[in-house]
Structures are given as C-alpha cells and as structure tokens.
Image (tube, rainbow, N blue to C red):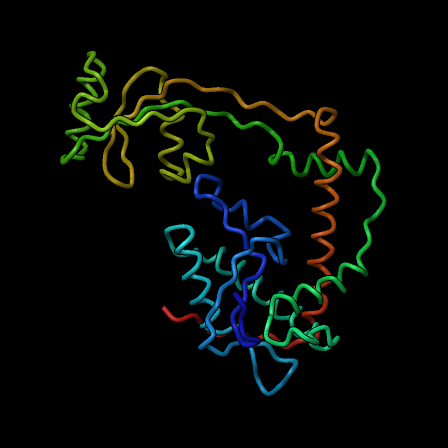
Length: 287
C-alpha cells in the first residue's frame, strides 16, 4: 500500500502480542525505523505536518487519531499517555527522515511513496554511523544493563474458575469453600488452566494488584480474588523460580544483540540531531 506525501506515517512500528509486557515495545530502539512487515498507517484524506515554513513540523490531531485507531485495532484498547508519546515520536522521526530525503533528492522516481523516501534517507544516516570498539568489558556491562531480556523469569501455574451468572464476592467465596472440600473446579464454572505464566503476562491479563495477590497464594488452595470481570475462584498450583542468565552461555547471542541495539541508538541520536533543524509544534489531541 502506498501513501501520499501528506499522510500520517508510523513506519517502523511493530506491535507485539498482548501476552507480552505492555511497555516492552516502547523500549525497542528499532521501533523508530523502517522494518520489513511494518504496519503503515494511511489516511490519504488528511493533510498533516505541512506548513508554509519547510522547517516547521506540526504534529497534529490527525496523527494522534490515526495512532489511536491502529493501536486500538492491534491491542484492543487505546494507547495510554506514554504509548501515545512514543507513537508521536515515531511519526516525528519519520517526518524528519522524509524531509531530509527530499532535501537530498533521494525521492527521484518515488515521489508518491513516502516509506521508500524514508528508507533512503535512513540509508544515508546509516552510512555515517559506525560502531564503537567492543571488548569483553563493554559487552558485560551492556549485558548487565539489559539482563531483564535474558534472565528467565519466575513462572506460575494456576487455575481460574468463573461462575456463570453470579460473579459476586459472596458467590465466589461460597464456591471456593466447595472447591476446597473436593468439588471439581469445572462442576459449576468455566475452568481455565494456565501453565508457566510469567509475572508480566499475569499483570497484562489481570492487573498488577491481582498478580501480586495470586502469586502470594498458598499453592494447592482455592481462594476468591477480584478481577476486572468480577470475582473468581483461583488456585496457585506451582511456582518455577527465576533463573539468572549466564554471560558465558549467551556470549554468541549477546554480540549481535549489542550490535543491533548500539546501531539503533546511534540512528536515533542522528535523527534527533536532524530534528533540531526543525521547529516542531504539537497540537492538542481531540478527545
């Protein structure tokens, strides 16, 4: 799909499955750049980001509206303030790259295909980006700062029984009493069994307070806990403890990961430096 030069563009956005931690994708440096299979937000009927001053960029309400629409389609909810800020930055980075590409005349033959112009401008940035020297100390320091990507988190096995019709606290507590007396979990409710769920996944599905309460339950005992959909009977089955990652074991993986992350950070820094050439104005988002 092609877009007009005046189209809101979030090229480079990759939306992860809802089961992963909510903010993980916000910390991904490559979020800001063109990748294969990227989602492209098209709104050909809306003009954004243009003004009589070629050095002025307006991040308008149309950008927010398009970001919210596609994010909601992918995640089932609207982006929060942090996520919307990140999406605006994606658009701004790409708008700067697009304008720099036009200034470098890399748009020859591609005047109607915005993403190609952005890609060509980014290639120019890449050509001037060089990796710093890396040794064991640099790699170890980077590993420690990014250990959360490699450590195996604690995982939880648990069951959830939801009564049909009555999801009140009283009904859930009465049902829990029956379950602990030997009544099968699927006798009067829909039974769901979860295996190996990490903390972040439970938070994503149920919320932080629920995750904390569930993980503190005595294993093997049914308890009534409140969820976003009402009260549920929950039973923690088992906990697999966290396992710290080993640097030596991961050495072969860490160097290419460090290379990708460092190059992406330098690209981001280079694009932000280009942004200083422009006067950026943010318009209030429509409710």
